[in-house]
Length: 252
Image 1 (cartoon, rainbow, N blue to C red):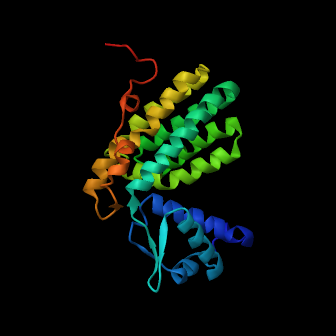
Image 2: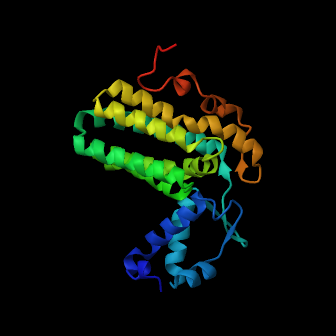
Image 3: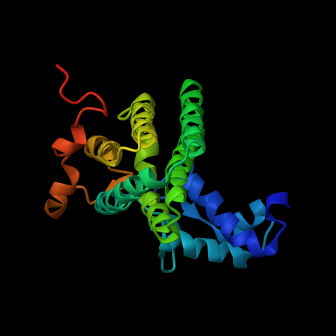
């Protein structure tokens, strides 16, 4: 048995994280079947924690159970990505404003370190490491404010967005673009400039809207429900989404 799964109380949560990562990183593509038997044998565990992990994946919107057929990785719902992005923007723009009140120099150094990690991941074309450091970056800002409920909300919203983000890395959304945006957020936080921090975060979170339409059209086997008039406004970046980076407003 893998040593990571020796603590019986942690088997289901760890299985969930392992399978979630595989789905987000497209190692388990939309439409892939998940077998309780195969997963239990692969990780050397009983089927009960596998079932629990599958339930959590279903609640996270990553898999669907089809009666008499099995469990399958869900296609990426454009509707749910738009909704999740809307929620993330509402929560994280507030978090980053409050973080300006409480952030320390040590916190700034930690955030800069995560950005440096992303630079190294980009050079190595390591999408998995890049995405993991992206999660840590946003979690670090949430931890500064110490609002656990808000953090859990952000984590839940990431389940849909992260698959789009991972697909877009190196193509529709170059990693250097996201690194630059993280740098803008850190600069605003270090200056304790709440307005600039909010603008930088909003611009960063709306980046996914730029990549989403093209990715959805180009990958109909991966995405679903693209043509939804009710969500048109959520899919169209407005002026704030393409505003100049922090410190560049007003330049010719």
